[in-house]
Length: 121
Image (tube, rainbow, N blue to C red):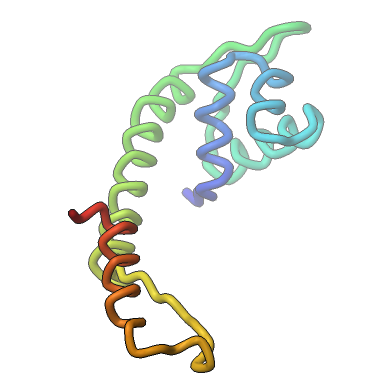
């Protein structure tokens, strides 16, 4: 089974709304584009996720299972991404300035700026 994360996120939005048009507005796609994306997602997963009616959609059993586990997966992926950003990229703030602006008291000013930004007192 292949799963595109953007498609999974959009699938979860569709399951929240249970309406393709409303979900499309939330994810900033047109209704036809989101419908096509969901059809591709179903094809990629190999499962029928929706029962489509003339004016409504309903989740299949596979759709219900994917909704439950997919939402949990996205939470975990967001946690991983957050941890990677914090630990690998660090929470360093870089400030650039022109050397022509440098004066003897600049180190004091920059220390004050850093304390202000970081919320130190």
